[in-house]
Amino acid sequence: MSITQLLKRVHLFRGLNSEELAQIEAICQHVILQPGELIIEQNTTGKEMYVIASGSVDVFVQGLENARGLVMLGKGQVIGEMALIDQGYRSASVKATEEGASLYLIDSDAFYALCNEYNRIGFLVMRNLATDVAFKLRHRNLADL
Image 1 (cartoon, helix red, strand yellow):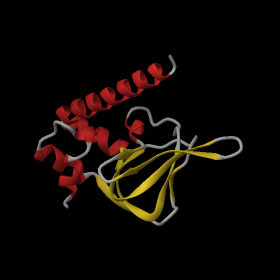
Image 2: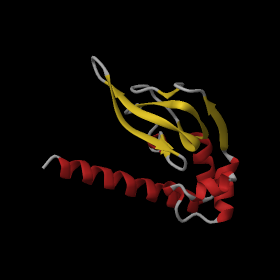
Image 3: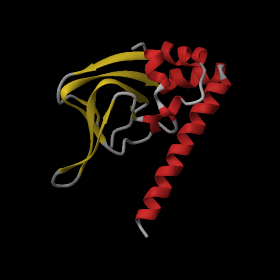
Image 4: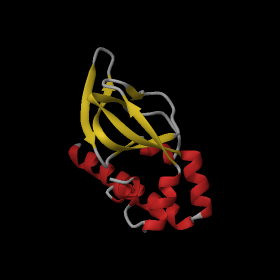
């Protein structure tokens, strides 16, 4: 499967045409994770997001006494996407599962430069990201009722 075919499966890139996906592909950097390798550490800053190409990753939060697993993510899913908004502190840690993982890194600086040149890409990706954040907030708020 080509990178562009993978990107077509990613919710964040929904609505982008083949030429726009090729522009995203051009800023992707391939990263291979060994089994158990940490890629994102909670409470550190970051400016990259990742698209999982193969394998899977565990997302977890570190408490005062232990770590609590949140979710396992696989092919076509993204991690670290909030870095495209604010490059703030990471809310969770992420590590490769026992099988390892292959990811594509998208640096926020390269993404912003792309969006400055191709405004439609920036608009669609940020709209998709905002929709995702709104859904998660609503879901969380409903769970608190």
